Length: 425
Image 1 (cartoon, rainbow, N blue to C red):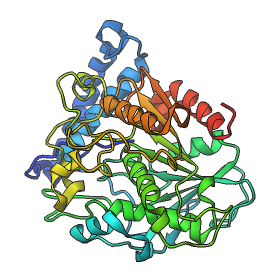
Image 2 (image 1 turned 120 degrees about the vertical axis):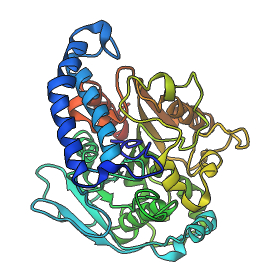
Image 3 (image 1 turned 180 degrees about the horizontal axis):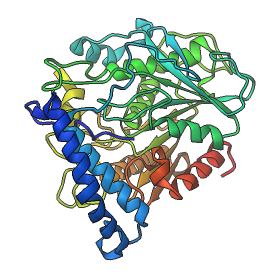
Image 4 (image 1 turned 90 degrees about the vertical axis):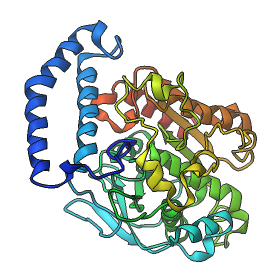
């Protein structure tokens, strides 16, 4: 699930409802007023097709989207209602598979990435990594691959400011479904990358770009160098901000794989080459404002989708950090879909080594137009046959991460992805 969400439109001053006792009083008011007032209104609106955000929506979807949208409005003022797992600790409760993953060797940080990391004063660190195995699997955690095995490498969404790689996170439903529908994939790894923050949430900038990219490389290096997966057997998946991160990871691997240290050779391939498949679920492809026009989906669909769309975007400000917010319009590692006239559109995606890519988009999500831009640019560079695009008209942002909301479109997309990965389409 995305979060251009909890903090996306955070004010420049802390909300008074972030601390007790006002936080508790505010939450009690929101709970009671929602049950007594808002819910009946949502139900009335849902049963009358003409009052729904989309006439084609069913009652269930209409009510759930209204509830999610209001939830994000509330926590924008209060901050998160609970504490999510983060990179500082490995949370392995009963039934959870996790391990500490050693930092990426600094010899793999080169070129522009090295320059950006020095500006932001961020470096590779030791991180938790969480595994999900398919039901009934007898594979030992961290075991090397068996012949013909593919692995899902999942990067969670959350606008780079929230959510987690932990299997309890809502976004983990994507990896579980991929394991269900891709017969050759038996397990997935998700890296607990560092989240960004800035004032007023924290006194200073914390973990700005490219911290998350360094962390994504750490997990990828673990799959290839430590476990021995061939890049061609890695299915890289990212939803929302995780899709943005997946695009940046592949961009780095395609631009610099020839200059990265060579590890052992698997199937004749350097171990840090790009993955065999890339799956993007509602990718946050323009962190800047180049798609913020009056006629774009960021505005025309804001009354339908559940995510916040303010220009004063806390998440973008936290993520860009010392590089300045303007780089979100000019740096294709940050905004691969930017329409800024100073950035050439041709050649953004390596025509020779870019992996086969599947892009899922909700036709009712505010990010739709920027996702369409990624599709168009990628097809222009890599060819129609390398890029599969699926847009579900009635679906909202990151519907693949929402089992209670995304059906039947969600199941249709996962079945198509399974056939696509296995070469049956």
